[in-house]
Image (cartoon, rainbow, N blue to C red; front, side):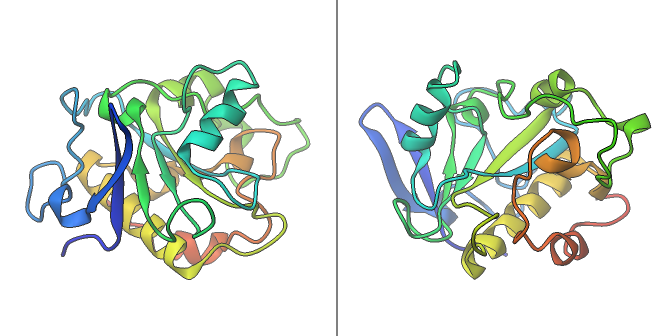
Length: 204
């Protein structure tokens, strides 16, 4: 079935909203996630990292400005999902890094050795590896202060499942940012167990 909601695409005149069915086509070879400016690089992507923006409201432009203050050029994530405050609830923004099939800039430094995240230290990939090979998805909001919206989470699951199937990404390579970096993102209110239960298991 077609994904729900709307994708926000970037063009020369700024973000524009289009129906999801205009982009996410049932039965397409890549799950409907066709980048606009480059061929889908199946050899690059082997993981997905889930983040929050850390602010209660915003959109892709405000997140990009915030990241610019940290020295990044442009939006570091591949996708951003709105919460109804600054960006429509459940809408998925497809960033330039996805449309150009470029590495992300979304995984921070490694956590302390004492960290107890579910990704063990022995098999934890480096931030550089994840930025090069993991798809970054950001939920607008602060998961340490309040829950994400039901629609946000529904669209997150739908997007992640499509990416898993399209790119053969196993469930153990769908990672929370706090599992691989010294951060709480996507926050303590993110429903990690329920999210994991909805991932594509086995061979996508």
